[in-house]
Length: 347
Image 1: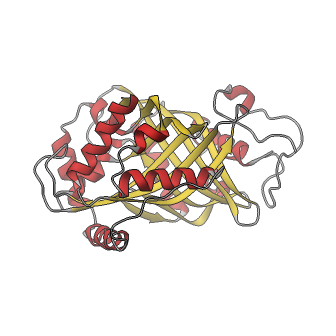
Image 2 (image 1 turned 90 degrees about the horizontal axis):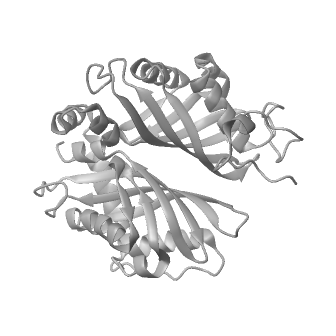
């Protein structure tokens, strides 16, 4: 079978004009789409770049659930409304498809993790304030379950802190405004998940199964974040590791990444990370590109990057794309909503 479309490093003009027969089984999908990556890239381009907003009704299920850092929404009308509002805020918004990592099949549904670099000029009002006329660039990762030509469920995370930083608004004022709108049930959900993850005491270190990329990633994250085995960074990450993380962070090498991990574990000493979904695709050079959707929960009991302890629980939805080669993490792109995290410390 012909290899599945790869967006990473490929020109958009070629991606928008695929040639040849269908590359994987796609029962119920329009005949024009050759594989799941082609489907995701082209429907995103049509809706956003070509401004064919009405296409959302063709490509999203009527009862599609969208999960975000600040709560969930249900229904295609909410997807339409959110798209129009974003284009009002950034009328010239462009979406660059950095990568699509996928899994699944036509029976259970295809799963896609779409990493996007967005650019736009703030010409309209946003939820953060009036137009600033500043040009921005920010990261988004959208994970979608796709079945018979429609997205039936989506998890969407934007680097909201980086957006506000570039707009120039007061971070504390923005966080206070977000906190006022967050449902109080978020704190209960965080406590419940934290209690569930703490049942294994003490947590046991895991050795990954040979040649199992999913087990490698899951066990590495568990050992590092849940077992506090910080030496995993030296053992499973290359020396010149590069991590592009939320709020415009660029972390380099073992020390840079170690600082980020200890920042969070220092602020949330009881913190735990759980993996909700994983998928991976191979590269010609033997490396693999992976997509991990995760949640981090913890109680703000420590002094650190988020100030004096508040005793408040937090639950952070995040998504990470890794490149893994020769049994080591080589590079990383992570997106989470740090504003939502900070707002949870105020409710």
